[in-house]
Length: 300
Ligand SMILES: Cc1ncc(COP(=O)(O)O)c(C=O)c1O
Figure 1: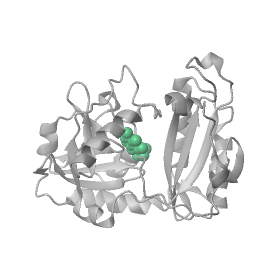
Figure 2 (figure 1 turned 45 degrees about the vertical axis):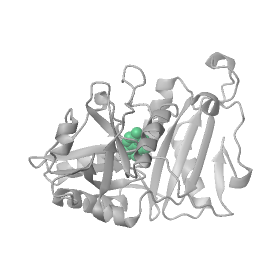
Figure 3 (figure 1 turned 60 degrees about the horizontal axis):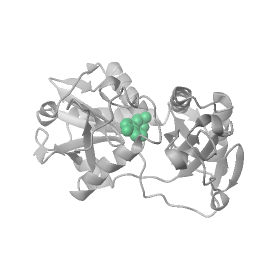
C-alpha cells in the first residue's frame, strides 16, 4: 500500500537507474512512461531490524510483473537485490519501508516500440507507519467501495502495475470520505477481491478463508506468509470466493499487506464483525507474523 507519513531526512540516498544519488537530486524524466501512462510496476518491501523481509519473493513478483508487461529490466534478480541492500545500507536504516518502482523507460507516445530500451528503476527508503498503534489494538473500520477492481481479463491482478492503482486510489478516497480506515473492493461479479492496499482474510468455522487471485486479489507476499503460518500452526486455510454476506457474518476478519502488516478488521459497513473486537485467531497470526519478520528475509 502506498500512503503518506513518510518522514524525510536530509542525508537520504536513492538508487536511480543503477546509481546512488542524494534524494533531493533524484528526478524522473517528464516523458517517463510510468509518469505518462502508469506503464510500470512496483514493490513495497519492509525491513525489520536489519532483515529485508521476503526480499526474494518481492523481487520475483516484480520480475514476473515486468515480464507480463513486456518490460526488460536489463539486469538480473541478484543485481537488483544488491541495489536494494546498498540503498538500505547507505541510508542506515534498521527498519524501514522500501519503494522499488520500475517503468518501461522514457519517450512520448504510448507505443513501446518508440521508446528507448532503458527501463527506469528507482529504489528509495522511508519510515512508514500506516495506522496509529491504537488501530492495531482496536481493529480497522472498513467500508465497501463502489469502485470495483478491474476484471482479471482486463488487467491481471497478479501484475502489480502502476496504472492499476488509479482504481485503488479512487476506492481509498471513498473510505476517506466517511472516515473509514480502509475500503473493501469487490469485483464485477460482486465477490470480495481485496482492500485498496491489502488482502483480506476471514475466519469461518475456525477456518481461514481468502479470495483467490482470480477474484481480483493481488497475490500478496504477506497473504502468502499468513497462509504458511496458518499451515504451520495447524489452522485450516484455503482460497474461497467470498461475498459481503461472508464478511458481515465472519467470526473474525483481518487485512494483510507489507505496509499495513497484519491488522484486524473489526467493522464493515457499520456492522461490527462478531463482537467488534480483534479475534483470538487474528491475535495468534499477528504474533507469529511479528516473530517471523525478524528472521525470514535477507540480512542487510
Ligand atoms: C492492491 C494490493 N493488494 C494487496 C497488497 C498486499 O500485498 P503484499 O502483502 O505483497 O504487500 C498490496 C500491497 O501493496 C496491494 O497494493
